[in-house]
Length: 122
Length: 107
Image 1 (cartoon, rainbow over the protein chains, first blue to last red):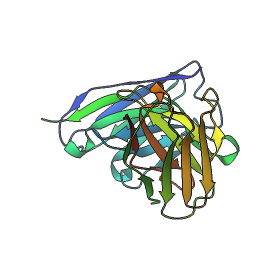
Image 2 (cartoon, chains in turn purple, green):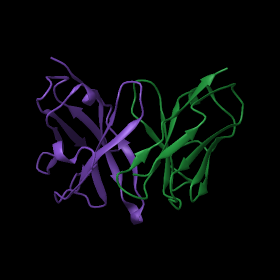
Image 3 (spheres, rainbow over the protein chains, first blue to last red):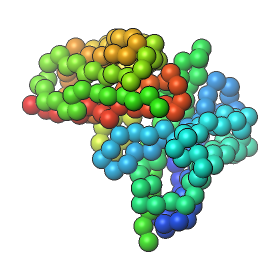
Image 4 (spheres, rainbow over the protein chains, first blue to last red):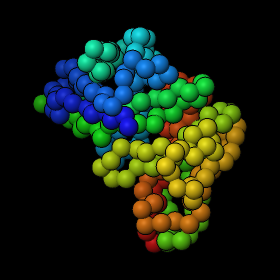
């Protein structure tokens, strides 16, 4: 079954850019019917949808983060990536990548990565 | 954004108990409501989608119901492995939003 794995620095300085990559295994990111997603969870808190990207490169972003956010896809490597600029301590969170299933217009997150803790601190 | 409110925020229950968690949306979302289970240090796991459809591999003691603005997740007979935090999520309009979570603890 599909597996997702996040990778990237666990510590980022304030005002810098947070970058994470999600590698998809046992499934092609180029398969239609999915939006490859990022979701974060602040320490001890709930879940926040960040955005997603189709294999074509089309994106959907959370308006609250849109001005600082870029999600990209590399189909040749079966990866997609997150870049969040001008980070502050409020961006400290566990970042999950996930597959959003779009079967018949129904949307749900059926596969998730294990999560990557990113701390914003000088 | 659509606000999702769960109740209670936490509950204590015993093995074998019937447990019900409620999720309310700030506007109608038809049946575009999903439920997830999260255990400490792990990613959420999909339990229920479109309000009442059981995800493959999820035990039948989990069930979901509701439409419009009010939804329910029921665990018919709580098992030791069910102690976790449960989240609802609306998939009616982006940005997708989640409830704040309901922590199910051992009594």
